[in-house]
Length: 53
Image (cartoon, rainbow, N blue to C red; front, side):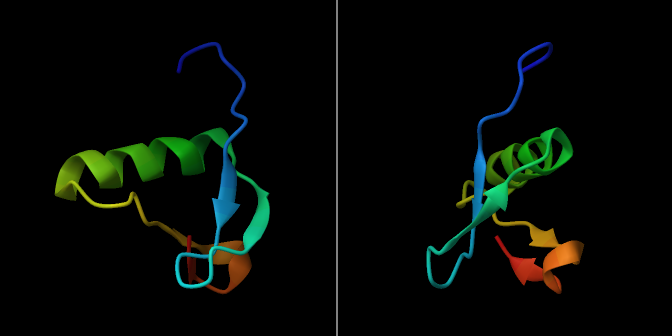
């Protein structure tokens, strides 16, 4: 991932609604969450009211 611009999109976990482009930090957080628990890489996003994305 280093040196490559993210093209990831945040989606609401419950509805799959696209929210906005994910920041590099959000992408890293999602990958970390997925690796940690083998799940979907769900993160909470503060600027979205702590929505699960």
